[in-house]
Image (cartoon, rainbow, N blue to C red; front, side):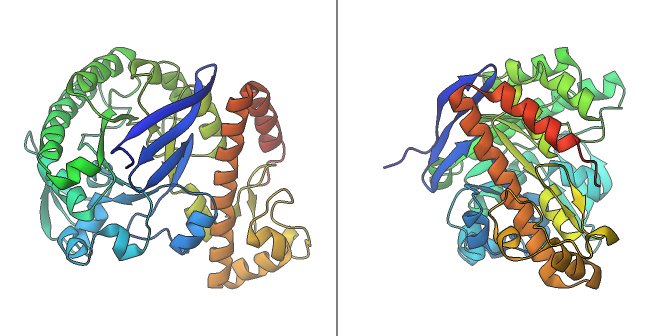
Length: 378
């Protein structure tokens, strides 16, 4: 029987690694991109098509699912996998980011956060224990510890206090997870490194998480407006502070060139709403840069979205047709664009894995960046 969680590195190239995470619901090839299924759906996609595009794992969200339809209801209906008909691994974000960014906060203290729902104004409390309970009810395969996120522009004192509290919450999250019975025997839990852009804070956070002990380690608090240069500056040291033999997950990232740069710096897992959100707003990712299908110049363009892509949208329809769908507000336009973007991301991950295995990541990354930045069609 497949072990609960096993990470195997099969090849390295510089700091980059490729390998597999083995879990009971299947293997996850790394570097991996997780499509975001916030509310039990990857928007505009059927689960089978998400898998067909190359995804080994998707992401769900504690905050959104606790509010609607509720974790308890999902549990009564057989768990998140059965509810949405996705039979492979699911990672659930703990809800900490959404609580901080979407909610009308009323109280934040050592216990957790009491907030008003952005849906109907009802009051809820999310603590480390409650976050882990919700993820258990959902049946998550990879559970995230509950943490406190503050902007990278916060004062050093605020950043240090939030990091320290996140580490106390990480310990409580681990204890709550370990008390989860059968779920804990089949799932994994990741801790989240915090500390904004400060190398010392990040190092202290990593040391605290390692002392607690987790199956994998996330790098949190980035991709929140600090810019790529600052993010890469942090990634020059943050992954190195985490265990080499555990997966490293960069939360909420990102653009294709962000992912390539992060892989070069030793990151193994990613998630981002960008490919699906862009698909619904007319932006397609191509190997020569992003293009905006709303632009009039595509009205009679008979080329595919990306000539090098083998997705159904690219092998069947023209840019002109998809331009028409997007301009007309037709649902099919959002569906085709989303499917293409997700396939583009999964193709990129496959190319990165192959380049690492072959020892040619540097040349691949340079060629990708040159082509991707060379068009500027946004």
